[in-house]
Length: 125
Image (cartoon, rainbow, N blue to C red; front, side, top):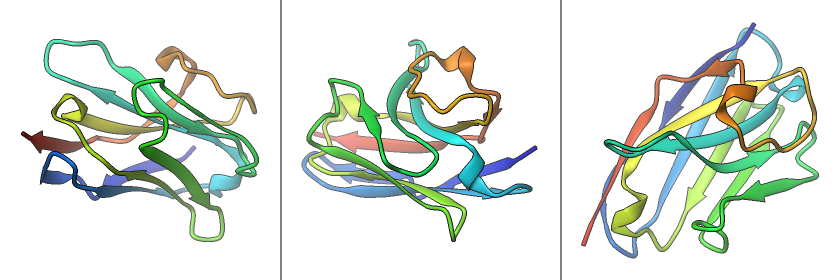
C-alpha cells in the first residue's frame, strides 16, 4: 500500500507556472504507474498526465500537451507536474494517482487504486 500527498498548488495569473509534487510513502514509488487527474467544480475527474514506472513513457491530455510536463524521481519517491502557460480553464483540484497492477498509461480514473487528497490550483485571467 502507498500513501500519496500532493503539494504545490496555489493561485496564479494566466500565463504563470506552478509545479505540483506528489510525495509517496509506504512502498517505493518505482513499482507504480503514476498519474495526475483534475476535477473542476461540477465536472468529472479527468486525466491530465501519466508516467510509467521507469519514466520511459508519458502521456498527456490534449488540453495540456505542450504546456504540462510530468516527471518522476524514484530515488525521492516523488512525482511532479510542471505546469506552464496556465489558463483559467486549468483551474481545478489536482489529484495524484497510483497503481501497481499495470505498467500502461491508462486515462480512466477507475483503473487507479491509490489517490491523494488533492491540491487546489486557481488561475485568474
